[in-house]
Length: 111
Length: 112
Image (cartoon, rainbow over all chains, first blue to last red; front, side, top):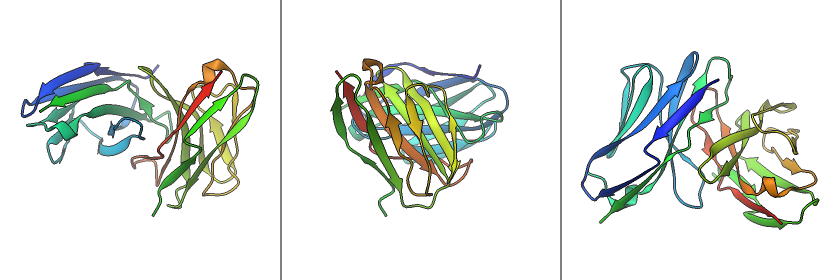
């Protein structure tokens, strides 16, 4: 069974304190790993897709990386507006277009 | 460009009642999905569709039904509501299998 595990469940940072969120996966035939941001009371917002080990993508203070077993979302010098829940999801060769989501990491950045 | 529109935003149902959650997208996406999100449980796939007239079950389809008569609309039907269906429901669409989802803003449903 495909599994996606995110850690930590919650993370509190001070403004400017860089850190990383982890998404580990146990799947057969990865076809893509997706990162989303979700603000309270809203739907998830797409951030990145990674397809192969070694791939990296960046957007403002966020950088996503991928290995054969996990992905990291690095947050550099975060600001309070980066506070949100970050979700990762995988698409595998047997699932067609469907995604399997992890449970998310709730990030709080204090000023 | 409205994206994915869900209605209603909030609803309280009594046990045994039925309702339809509406989802419409204006991006001409073929792929559409219904997820539920429970606290601490992540997003679970209920039903999905790869095009008009084609639907299939996800991980947690029991108690729900869907139809896809047009590209734009993908309603989710709850028959005989149960407290276990209390959740936040998200509809999503995507242009193709390798694209990210575009989510609606969700429907918060409480069954009492």
